[in-house]
Image (tube, rainbow, N blue to C red):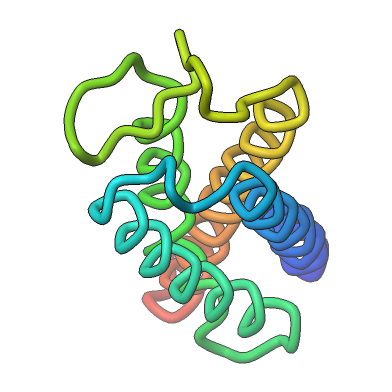
Length: 138
């Protein structure tokens, strides 16, 4: 189980790096290219993501649970906002983006964030599953 916790910390750091770079890319592109819905969803996702990553990194006992509960939804949400073609006010679609400042760097950092969040969520889920098996005697 110690290996899983170490991997969870690595993925939390990787996710945090992607989140920081993605946020910096949004600032570079300018917030005026975002809808209010994307801004609010991004702010909420950032607060939840930072909280989960910090709890994991400091080794808090609820870190794996929060990672499991937030990592996969955050990854899916960021992917839906940026990787799908424009589908609603919750889109900041990179696909077919014109005059929004989307570059190869934008694609790279958003993929880092998505992969980090997904990996953090999956490993958190594995740890929670293993902890439940231990406490239930399975």
